Length: 355
Image (cartoon, rainbow, N blue to C red; front, side, top):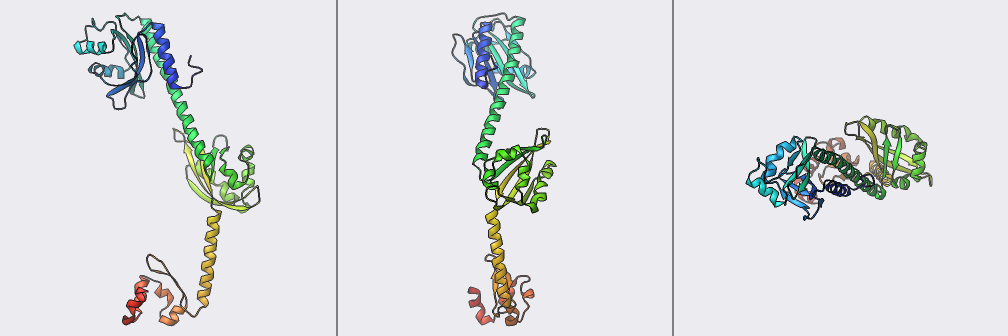
């Protein structure tokens, strides 16, 4: 019955119904323990002539007294709550509150934690057989394992869905290298926008990736995955030659190791950003500053550049020495704003500083 089911809730619903019908029980359900240790909840139950227990509940005194045994993995069975010699009045009241006279409780302990209890209830007294207890235990284990698997797979699908949504809409190129297979296994649509090449073609033939790298930068780019495989996050800038138009683009590529639960690097991921315009702006600024300095070196007037926040000089032309009688190297040292102010006549200093 579980084979065609992928949803944990459907598996739980099918299991409690099948067990309830097989045993002719009044109610069957999984009671999942709360993280706080003081509550339990039911999501789905099988109920024959009884109201559903779906909802959340605090642990009763009866349940608290049995936590140690359930934590130890011991199955509990009650044939008749009214005749059970170990019960007191609160215990019988706890059974009566759920219209129950006989019950089986199969604990599920995962990673040392009491996670849930499969509970089988009967409204009338019932002497449980060893075969029925064994069936309840086997159902509990097999059903919970199937539910956990379904939950894990659902979480994985949800996680992959979020990743795909992020990667498909990102302007950057996102790539994943499979360490064991020694190949690229994922490229997002952003790769096509930057490299000008169909990602599927590159995934089918990894040599296409190398071919699109600028010849002068191939060795630097090729060194990224091995360093990331060794556990070192690394950011490298290199050029690519677009397949679509032959344009040269600068890329800043940040790669990082992806580890499994044992800490082994089994994938290498990377996010590559087109920084061509940033590079061009930096080059233009550098050229502009170079032209400015060339002009200043030849000028007979003082040309200066000062940091707007600290007021410290970043540049002084040679004319400073001729006019102030102090070498520009000396003027640029220390607190040069204060040193410059001291060179101004006292009667003119306030006006000069204000300007």
